[in-house]
Image (cartoon, rainbow, N blue to C red):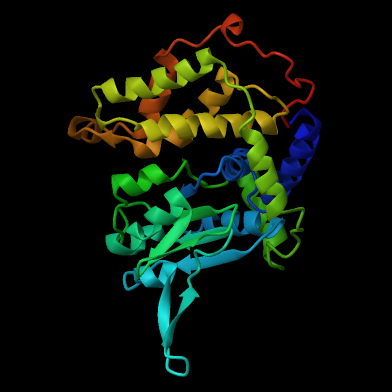
Length: 331
């Protein structure tokens, strides 16, 4: 792991540079997206139309030499349109399986909450177990496997809110947001005369990212850091403004993506800073607000930020770093 840490840092930095050249003004988005890929999770991108949600997903896919599938979710989309279907061949008298778009390394699900709940649920087995079961037969999905789903705000017409079980499968949620004036001006200069994705280069391969993902598991997390994660998650379950707190899956996924975040920064150990930086994108979308919170204008992100402020942070003495490669600094 130590020998390859420099390669991981350099490669992921190049991937982030490519993504940031398209989604201007928000380097944190590229960092989180790559961290989720390394941690073996899935990403939910939520915002109003036209701010670059799909562009972000396409940019990541183009920088990695991997198989890419894209699905435009619509109300009439069927589960078999995602997973695939068995087709009867009269010439052979047998059924032949035709795989759907989920049989790719990076699957872009555009406007996932415009499909019916039945179709949304077809992704559950894919995202959790990395496989698809059709007519009693199970098919493994390629690895690495990343679903990048874009979602319109639930207040918009023609949307179906994602059920809690589906949201919990996404390791993190991010919001692209409107760019600032300077970033939007750069976008007008660069993207009005050419395809914004045309200049992107392939900087790594799916097999390399899969190798990096294996290294992530070796990143050290001290018992105090793990307890810090449990304290944060536990406070969401006791918060008076929430009807439903974060699940045990949230604790596990927060630790996984914190390890990826640390490795990308050139460290072989997780710091409380990693956990704090990821708490909102990993926890907020899993929470269900109480009626009183919704009426008073609170949101889940604000509650997670409050929980982070109120939870005691482990001291440096509680987080031994051992022989970690601390000479690499975050970009």
